[in-house]
Image (cartoon, rainbow, N blue to C red; front, top):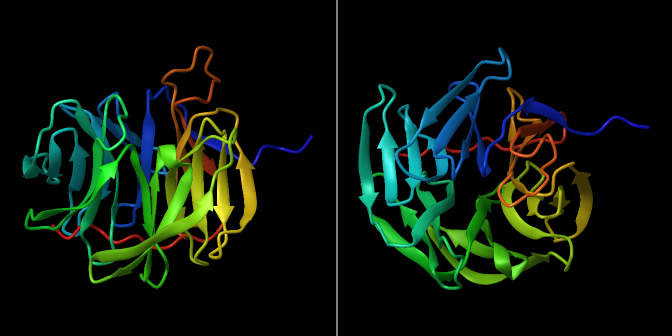
Amino acid sequence: MSAPAYEVAVRAEATLGEGPTWDAATGRLLWLDILGSRVHTYDPATGRRTVRTTEQHVGAVKPRAGGGLVLNLRDGVGLLDADGTFRWLHHEPVPGRRANDAAVAPDGALWAGTMRYDEAPGGGTLSRITGDGTAEVVLDDVAVSNGTGWSPDGRLMYYIDSPTRRVDVFSYADGRVDDRRPFARIEEGAGFPDGLTVDADGCVWVALWDGGAVRRYTPDGRLDRVITLPTPRVTACAFGGPDLTDLYVTTARVGLTAPHPTAGSLLVVPAAGQGLPQPAFQG
């Protein structure tokens, strides 16, 4: 019997583990538990881990160019300085709605998603938020705003609204998107697309919620690799490590009656591919 492709990087019981992001400046992997209101860091060189509790549900966390973090929170987007000081950058509470996945664009803006707790169609948004706090709603008819990422040349943006079972692609230029079209479709019974990352070859890696896997699609939308994982609720993936070759994968326990021991842990697939350096938020 061959060894599994994955290893357990951090054994945890996150309710809704999400959002792995490599922070190149600190050499740490950021990830979070949305419903547990916790931001985690993991240093693969030393094994050191930290956990910070947030005062409300947190959908995404990304590094800032000058240090500190930007947080996509239930009631808006906030900035956390290195000394622990917090302030709102864009505060927009909406009853019944929370933050979800987010990504930093090539120009340093944050593309932040929201969704209703009841996942009602049209209850979520995707907004572009710049370092001065300017917020522009780009998509206003979303159910579960999820994976967002850019091609190596920055001319394409990939996006997932999970219940559609699609990965869509837009043309992207100067902070604007247009020409939305389907890139890949997830067949019935294979789960729902959740988080995504784009590698140096322009291939798109997609985590499958209730699919127990991460899939890699070529730039023309062809499925060319499947990494099977032991727990069904696979939420997101990102390349990390000093050479950006290890694929980190977050998982969730929420809703599972008999969760696998790895459910809620941070997993890693060593030497899975070659990731792209990710821009820090300019704010």
